[in-house]
Amino acid sequence: MHARIRPATATDHPHLLVLWERSVRATHQFLEEHAIVALRPVVAEELGSDAYEWWVVERADTDTVVGFLGYSSDTIEGLFIDPDYHGHGAGTALVAHAQGLAGGALEVDVNEQNHGARVFYQRLGFVEVGRSPTDGAGRPFPILHLRRGADAAALGAPSRAEGR
Figure 1: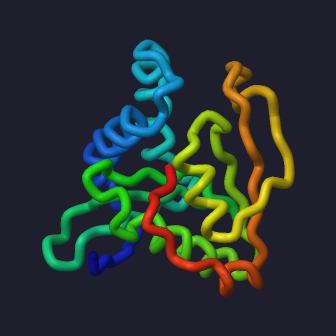
Figure 2: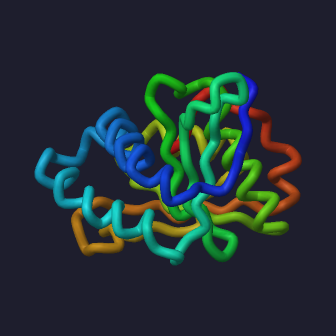
Figure 3: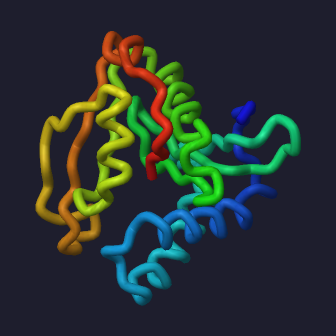
């Protein structure tokens, strides 16, 4: 897939929220329905805030948004790909974009139960540098703290898997 990355706009936010939910339902089987429903307004609020830089990846041939990235201070704060586009390079393109924004080491936190994301980031050269027994809201979802140096980015081969 030939992709284009651009800053997200306010008009993207409703679509990104739908995309987030589709991605989470496909990749976060450890979350129960009530947790997804409870997270929806939190994600909507974050998408509307200036806390992160929001970037979208779209198919260059159709301008269809197939994924998005939240970025702040050398950290991927969120990466979500439409499940129909897993394995097409959109996640890899967004990680490369984030690495360019960072200019050096890049960090990301991943749910330990999200095996696909763990494999995706490991294939791109990220290594575990820490673990928290709960997520940021104190829920019992362990978080792995991953880091990739700028030198590892050059060595990381593109992956066919997609991260979350």
